[in-house]
Structure formats: structure tokens, C-alpha cells
Image (cartoon, rainbow, N blue to C red; front, top):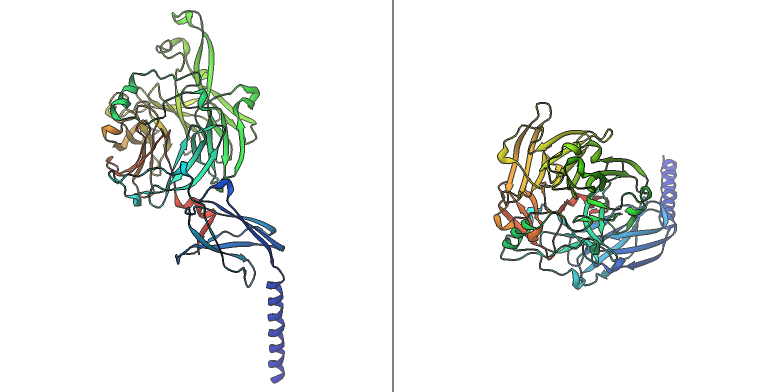
Length: 493
């Protein structure tokens, strides 16, 4: 029996020695810190090992007991680990952990983040307006600046910018989260489409109604390029529209989206040469319309749709009046079956377009295919999408009632009925005749953007405001970034 114990003891010593050798046969050659693009909320840690292993970084704010950790890297000698959503001018402590049976840890080190850049310091939240940041449910609001330099910023409930990406040569008109957790941005040269980007008071906003819809050759909010950015701030690719399909699609009209397959779906400006004498007009004219272009992220065209192929031009009673911009499609999204939903502002309708045949499957809204209470008709609507309840939702600019807000409808596509579900009108001083957005938050409240007044708000379903952000520029729309987006980058330990 004693001999057995001796053998067990020897085996344990050998195993312990093997474990010690295994865990200490790799070491850290160097650790180098940098601040990409001088953004105070983002720290890069370059880790070099003497052999290939997986690593992660444990980090925590000075004085805090809450520790965070990045996700495990792939096995390699060199690792680039990003710490995101850091607070400016703050000391953080960290350790590099080599993932072994018995983890190998570096000594505890620290760094101080940079001070916030002066151009990012704005009075986003004001004490005199509702400012209950908890209503954002831990998420943030994503805003885009279309002037130079263009940027995308994510602002938290306290009014602090927690994430930031900048591009110097072009503005950013709109951005949206993709199915793969990146950001798809529509880029816009400001000199091509001069608009007034200063938020207005109510009286000034109402006077916008008197201005024509057309704003320059591109139509206001036109874009000329698309880019994808990951949440570390790296631009994965950028495509200028004049390089696509022989330069036929030079202009994006309002919106870009990414489908579940990773393809980019774009609203385009499509033109048609037409002899207006056929409808009592004078001579040859170029009609302004819209279309949908689907391409991959290399710029290869996959599919396209032209509204003029589905439109009876010669029997259109409004063609003379709106020849330069007949439809003004201002937002694009996907129905639950992946067919396309487009907001057709001039018609005060939402259309569903078959993604294979290009046929218009139905029209919702004024004079549309669904029976609905006409008192809930929307006009010049934006930000069409299917909300978490499965209902079709838009931001109603309501040109005729001059009161904007979130509306949604339960659609019975068999019996063609539309039943109002949400009708959250904003106060009259938040009326915006152009742009805007509305989305349901995880806590069932609403994120609403009144673009012309520069106000982004969290409201209840009655339109009562609980939190308000004040933009110093006109935000085309405001999208919600849930806290879960960052699960692919870090977690609480």
C-alpha cells in the first residue's frame, strides 16, 4: 500500500511540474498602449508574446470595485486589444491575462485616458428640460454630423459622448447598426447640398412649410458614398457611388441598409427622360424618381429596381407639379419576410416592394390598399421599420396637422386592414416638417427625434417627454444603441 502512495505522490509531482512548465513556457515580450485617432474613450493595447496563445485584458476604473474584461483573442503572438467606452481624463488599471490551464497574469499597470476633445464638449442635456437618463435603459443615442468634419457620436443618458468616429473629407448624413454589429454610414459632401443645419424655434420651423421640397440638384439629404465601421472605430471599407455600375448611380437618396446576407441596400435617385407634351406639358423633360440598388461590399451590383418601371406616367395627375422629384422616397427598411419597405413622402404612403420581382405588393396610407381610420393618416413620414411588436412604425411629420410624432399600425395583409397601435404625438413646439425618427426602446418607451428643432427625446406612448437631448446641429435621425451591442467586445468579470 505504501508503494502505491509513493507512486501517486511521484505522479502528482510530475503533473505539477508539467503544469508549471506549461503555464510558464510562455511570456509577455512587450505591452504597448496607444490612443487611436486621439479619441479619449478608446485605448489600444498591443501585446506581444514569445509564442502563440490566447489573451484577454482585465481592467477597472480607479477607485471602482467593478472589473471588466475583454473577450478572448484568437491564438497568436501579437494581439491588438481595444478598451472601449472609457471615460475621458480617468485613471484605469489593467492586467494582461494569458489563457492557460492556470492563467498567467502580468503585473498590474495603469494609464490615464486623454482629456475630452474640446469640439466634443457640448451642453447636450439641460437641467431645465426633462433629463431622466435612466429611461434610455442603459443604451445610448447615435447621432451623425453632416458638416465637415463628419462624425458619428454615441451619447449616453447623462449627455456624455461615449463613442466617436470622425471622417475629415465628407459629412455623415445617417448611420445605422448592421445585422453583424457594425455601423453602416451614408456619407454626404455638404457643398453638394446646402441646407440650414441650425435647429429652429417653433415659428421658424413652421415657416419651413413654405419652402419647396427640392433643395439643390441632389435633393436634400443626398449622399455620395457608403462606409462600414466596426465598433473599434476602424473603417472596414468605403465605396464612392460614382464607381458603381459604370457611374449610373451617383447619388444616394436618403437611406442605406445592410440585409442579413451582408449586402448593402441603397435608395437611389433614378431619372426618366419624358416628352411632357404627351400629358399637356411643354417639350422633353427629365423626371426625378427613385430606385433601390443592392450591391456587395466590394461595390458589385446584385439587383436594382426603378420606380418608373412600375409607374403609369401618362395617367399621373401630379406629374407636372412634382416632375423634378415625383416620389421623394426618404427611408428604406425590411419587412419580416425580407421584402423592402419604402417611405414615399409625396404620396404620404409606405410601399412594400418585392425584392425579387420589383412589383409593388401593397401601399399603406392615404388612398392606399388598406382600410384604416383616415384620422390616423400620416404625411411626409420618415424612418419606416417593423417595431419589436411586429407592427409597421413611422415618424409622422404630419405636414397638414403640423404636429409630429411616432405612429404604428397592426397590419392584416389578408383582409387589408390597418389598426392604429401607437399614436405618440410630440408637443407642438417639437414639430418638424422634415426628417425625424421614432423607435421603441427595450423598456417600451419611445426614442423620438424632432430634427428641425434639434431635439431628441424619450417619451411614453402618449408623447410625454421624460428625457431630452439638445443637438447643436440638425440630426437627420437618432438611432438607439442598446447596451447588448458591446457584448462582443467586453463583459463584467
